Amino acid sequence: MIIFRAASVYDIETLRQLARKIWTEAYADLLSPEQITYMLHLMYSYKTIENEMHNGVMWEFIQEGETHVGFISTTIEGTALKLNKLYIIPSWQGKGLGQQALDHVKQTARNKGLKSLYLTVNKGNCNAIKAYEKAGMCRIDSKIFDIGGGYVMDDYIYSYTL
Image (tube, rainbow, N blue to C red; front, side, top):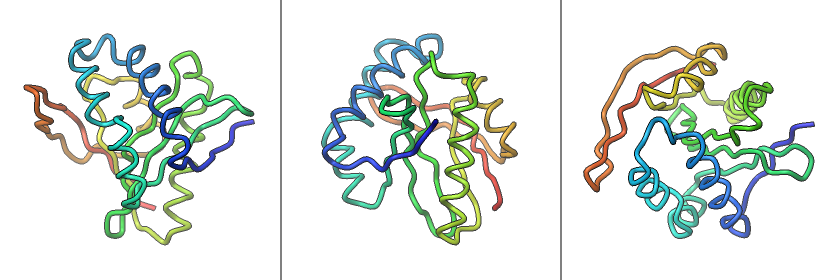
């Protein structure tokens, strides 16, 4: 049975290890090894995650029993919930966990009285795009974000009205 468990500062190292495992497997065909390393350092350093937790970013584990199989990160922005991260270990993908996670995120937003959910997704991440569209999300825009180090994120923006 899948459960969603809030992560705390005591879980940061576990989140970092999970991110490294997922990113090196999931993005190998989308990003260069150098960009993966750069982005892992940028978004998953201990200090970055700690600062996010202290500034209202909610991190949650996706667990099958006691096994961490993925994680979620969300932020409230006005009347919307931004899904910053939803990652599942590739060997656990295709089992409905992504849809369960999206349902969980939608319910979290509803419980907080928010009006919508939105996210960004790499334009080449076809599996994630299919999952978001299956969950009823609509592509509303595309943007290129300069993340420094000579790298960009070339993303679609998806939204869901609650």
